[in-house]
Image (cartoon, rainbow, N blue to C red):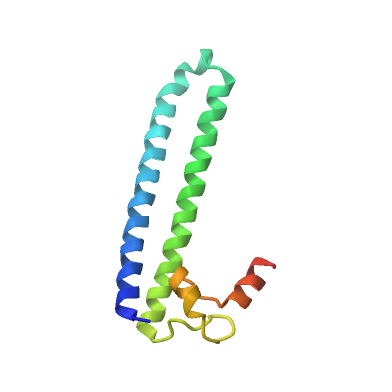
Length: 120
C-alpha cells in the first residue's frame, strides 16, 4: 500500500467533507434566520409547514454530525500514518486487511473488532 497516495486521498476526502459540512451548516443557519423572522407571522401557517421545517433542521443537524464523525475518522487515520501505525487495528493490534483499507482508508479497526463494536 502506498501511504503517500493514501494520505493524499484522505486529505482530499477531508477537504470535501469540510466543504459539505460548511454548506449544510450555512443552509441550516439561513433556514433558522428565516424562521426567526417568520415567527412573528406564524399565525396563519399550516402545522405541516412547521413540521417540515423542523424535519429539515433535524436532518441538517444529523448530516452535519455524521460528516463531523467521518472527519474525525479521517483525522485518526492521518495520525496513524504519521505515527507509523496505519493499517493496525486500534483495538487488538492485528493488521487490518488491505482490502478493507482500500475500501475504507479511514478504518481503524479490523473487521472482527468492527463487528464487535457494531454489536454483530
